[in-house]
Amino acid sequence: MSSDLMHCVLLSRTTDLRKYLKDEIKRLEGRVAFVDHLDGTNAADVRMAVGWHPHADAFDHYPNLQAACSIGAGADSILACPSLREDIEVVRVVEPAQAQMMSGFVIFHAIWHQRNFATYFAHQRDRIWKRMGQRTTQEVPVGILGYGAIGARVAADLAALGFPVKVWSRSAKPTSEGVTGFHGADGLNAMLDDTEILVNLLPLTTETRNILNAALFAKMRRGGYLIQVGRGEHMVEQDLLDALDNGQLAGAALDVFLAEPLSKEHPFWTHPGIVLTPHDACDVTLPAVGQTILATAEALKAGVKPKDAVDRMRGY
Ligand code: GLV
Image 1 (cartoon, rainbow, N blue to C red):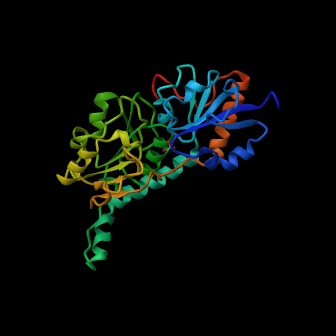
Image 2 (spheres, rainbow, N blue to C red):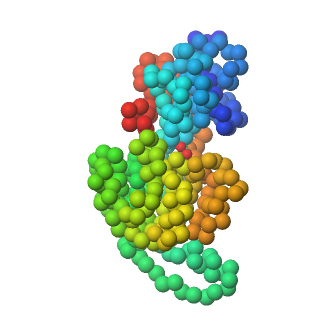
Image 3 (cartoon, rainbow, N blue to C red):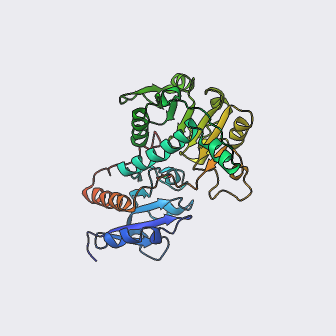
């Protein structure tokens, strides 16, 4: 066995990572040896992991594990694992193509709302010919929660279409042309004021859990629209249903949910104000995951901090 071979364990209780990463596992052969969880490999040889919703005790089995890579932009399912040790670097995938895909997804829903497509869709079904009138993008302010690589791309693209764009982040950040920045608790209220379309792109942390609730919806422009592409745990589901039913929100596009897959009985499926997709807004590409795994393996061999390691204090 080459001493250069990095042992990387596949840790997931929800996804068959060997199958999902099949081509990347093949491509990295000779540089990274992928082992299955508890398959009898000498656990002491394992220095890194690829994870997505790992078992609660997963990390207890690997005393020399130094880094765990997510298979997505979010690393929250690894960070939430009770057996994750403080000294393990958690690495997420950062890929410009993912930001571009997310931007297209958000733009579709923003225009769906701005141009009344839900109404036209319903009218076509009933053969109703009725012009709904038009509003320019300039008349529809968009607020974005989260201004990382993905938020920045979405904000710039919406601004280029003419939407007034406001972004909110934990700390102050420079913004691109046509984008107004807000930060901190006071900044959040100011950002929400008169926001008609709210896009959630926040990482999931203790501070952001349940942030999408009745009090927040009440601060938006009445008849607003929510585009929820963060994590299900960001939203109080009943508060969304109430805001839709009392008219505070006119509609919502939901891609993420508290429990996935969404149960067949869930009221979101049939609510007339909701358009939903099965956590499919935009995945990182598999080559990007492979690249992150390889770069992390190389960083461990070189004894340096892996690129795109999460700041454990901030939680993203
Ligand atoms: C998707 O949810 C991701 O984290 O990339």
